[in-house]
Image (cartoon, helix red, strand yellow):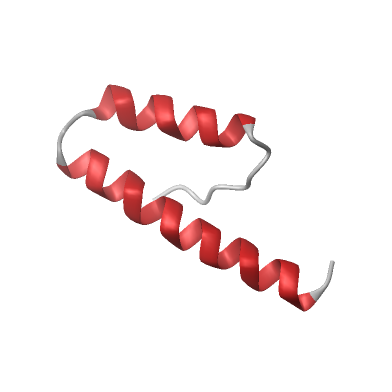
Length: 49
């Protein structure tokens, strides 16, 4: 794994976590978990918030 791909992953993870936080704040847990699982299906690593 190159440094570039790692830093790109980290940027992606931060962006994703911001979206998940927004959804959780809206108290719409169901759609937050749906989006989370669909993101997981795309083969991206997501760090739980």
